[in-house]
Image (cartoon, rainbow, N blue to C red):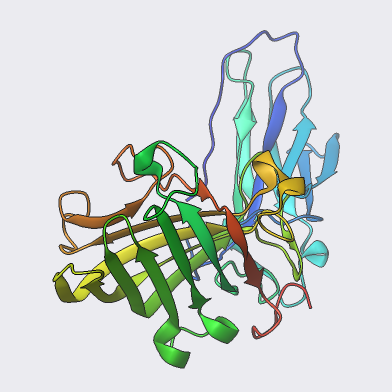
Length: 309
C-alpha cells in the first residue's frame, strides 16, 4: 500500500513532496511497523512534460523531501535503483513509478516506498543480557528486601527462531513470588526508538530495540504454590547505551525492559499474571522500565547477510 495524501494550501506556495523509503523487515510485501527507513536512496520526481525535475537522497530515517513547482502540474516519481543496497528491488509500487497531480487546492503529496534487500531486514537481530529492576508497584526505587526483579537470557541466538526454540528468558519477581521461564520464542522484530540516536554501539548494530513473544511456564517461589506449565508472554528490550545501567548514562540512555506474562492468548490484559510496566497503566502499550543494574545488548553479527559486522 502506498500512502499518499493531499493537503489544501495557497497556490503561491511551493508544493512539498515527501515520504519514506522503507525496507520489508518482516518479508510480507506490505508497508507496516516492522519496516525500517533506509538511508542513501535517491528519489527523483519529474513533471510529465519533462521540463522540470528534482532529486533528493533519503536521510538516516529513510525520509526524503522535495519542493514541486508553485503551479498545478502532473508528475512521475521514481527511485534510482542503482542507489539500492546490493540485491535490492522496489516492492511498492511494483512499477517503481508514482504518478500524481497537484492543483491550486491540493498541494502537499506524501508517498512511502517499500524495498526488499538482504542488507536491511528488520528480522535479522538477536539479544543477550540480564539485570535487575525494582518493582514499580512499590512506587519506590529503594533497594528494599523483596522488591527486586531479576531477569536475563537470550533471544533468537544467531538470529534463529529454531536454535534452542528461539531462546531462553528468565524473569524472577520476588514481590509476586513468581518465576517465569520463556522456553519458546518464535517471533522477534527490531527497530529504533524515536527521539534517541538510532542503532546501538557495543556491538554496533542498526537497531536499539527488540520485541519478542512466545510461551513458557510460571512457578511459585518462597512458599507460593502457583504452578502453570503453559503461559504466554511478550516483551520489549531497549539497548540504549553501553554499559546499560551505570549512573553516567542517566535518563534517556539507560537500557529499558518490559514484560507481560498471561494465561489466555485471546485476552492478555484480562489474564495477566506478571507485568513489568513503567506506569502500571495496564493497557497494551509496552511501557519500558529503566533497569537498575545489568546490561542488554542487541546483536546482528551472527545473522545471515547482517546489516553491519
